[in-house]
Length: 110
Image (tube, rainbow, N blue to C red; front, side):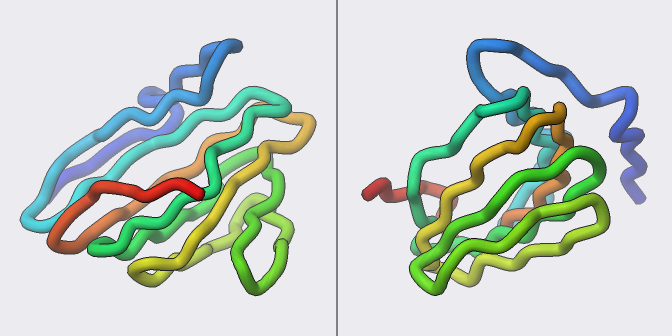
């Protein structure tokens, strides 16, 4: 069993969002991602891994080729292998919990 406290693990930096891998398990990992207002990820995909996000606090928008959705506390988002996505943080500090699993974790940018 592995237990994590997101409040204790969160870490923010004004210059760039912080991704902190909390643990690696088999073919994946669990991460806390901390975003300051206005931070944005590149538009990217993980061709050999599925990515699952849970919004713990804050929020923003998640864009894919199919459109854009609001990310709010309690939202649960699954990106299947190969789905391009981009997260843009909103006006508050945001904490996302991510589970990523698959054969490879490398990403491709557009």
